[in-house]
Amino acid sequence: MSVRLPGPERRDSILKAAQRLFSEKGYHGVSIDEIARKVDVSPAILYRHFKSKQMLYDAVLQAMSAQRESYVQTIINSGTSFEDVLTGMTQVYIKSISDNPDLLRIELQSLLDKNPAASDFFKNRWKSFTDYIEFSLNERLPYDTPNREVTILTAALMFQGMLREVLLQKHLQPQDRLEDVSLHELSQELVRLFLRSVGIEKSHLSRRAVING
Image (cartoon, rainbow, N blue to C red; front, side):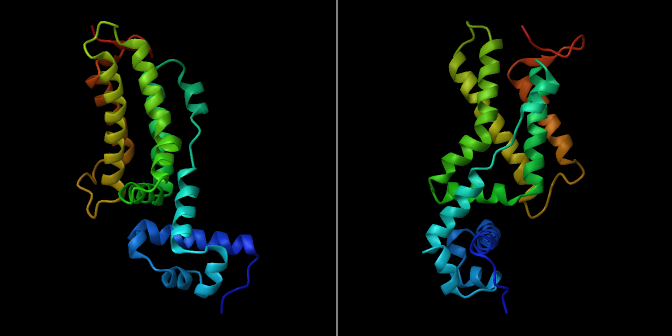
């Protein structure tokens, strides 16, 4: 017999159960009956809180896509070093995914389903990276760099793709091909390779990032 919960608590329990099931199976792989069983309520009670499966799915996506990390302390601790700030931001982000891999699964589901929440995942979870990279490269790359604007935009997109692939490898692949390399080590190497690819390396004489030229 299910425990009678106040309305807000019951709604929250339904959202959490739905989050887990939708992240594992996608929208079409989950039924209302399955979600109701998970929280030990009848479908009728579930429908009191969410009028349809689509509305429940949208609520799960909206709640998760609205989550964002704070990078303020990272920026304060890193000063003006491009590498240190980007490394710090990356560590904050991978910790959030490691603590809750459903965030990554639900984001991918929203992309596959072409759900409007996909744009919110970018705005709230990736845009901090792309904005920071675009701003930093705009400050550092010489103005006579060929295809400068496209290079900056592509670099930000490249980093997003690289980081997502690392997280997919560590959290969603059935078998981790890189099990001897920790997520922390991978992410640090990712930043180093990324900076090298856009012509930036860390000076051995200071903590500031410099342009190769």
